[in-house]
Amino acid sequence: MTWKNLSIASLFAIVSLGAVAANAQGNVTPHAYMYGDHLDIAKVVSVSEATSSGCGVVNARMAYLDSAGKSKVLDYLTVGQGCGQNN
Image (tube, rainbow, N blue to C red):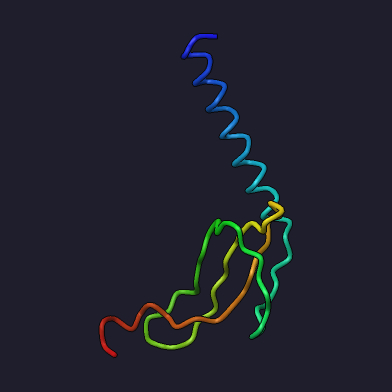
């Protein structure tokens, strides 16, 4: 097997794994975080939060993989990033 064939095969493998992860993430029901929940987070896939122009509490969502490799989504509250450098 030449390097060219090996690199093409590797590229297709990576692209197909990404597509499977994206498809699995779309079918996951979000879990709302409650204080004291024990989370099994092996790898964070993405984090997003609602847009906010000022300081305050906003909704956020984290997609992650647990230690078994299962995709999960967590909804939680966080402080908005629109606060700037003022404390």
